Image 1 (tube, rainbow, N blue to C red):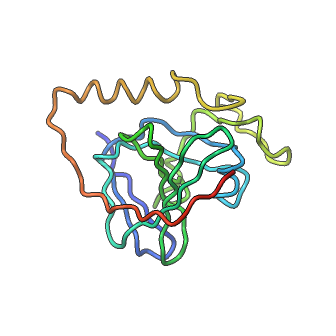
Image 2 (image 1 turned 90 degrees about the horizontal axis):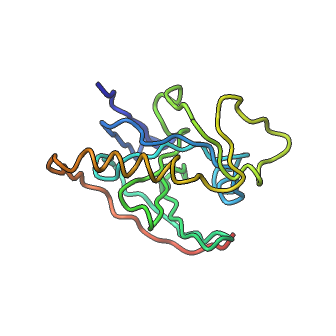
Image 3 (image 1 turned 90 degrees about the vertical axis):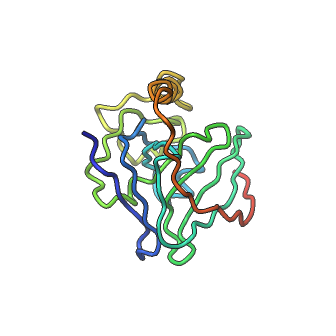
Length: 173
């Protein structure tokens, strides 16, 4: 049985919960993730959007267009500024949730590290993860996501109310 994944922002105004296991867990070393996290990388879990519920205040978001031209919407708490979630338009069925926002960050067990070509030399990699110079190949993200949703096709969807994201601007990497 899957345990409930819970988390939220630093001030407690925003909370989330998800009753599904993460579809993937990864560390991203892209320059954009470094800037957004204020650190050497972003640690994220991919969760199904329709099973992820946000509670409390409304997320605020800003759009980013990476050097590769990929659109990303980064969501944060408008009260304390804590990064909470990431959405990519080409992947509407999943959201990336920041591992640091988990109530129990010890459940984060990344299987891969992406954009290691942009990693900071002063930060070591995890020995047990697969490393990719750029983004993850389909077998790391797209295939598990597709398999998860294919297994659910016989079940009726259980949509959860998501707070609308308020777009505040565009920043180029």
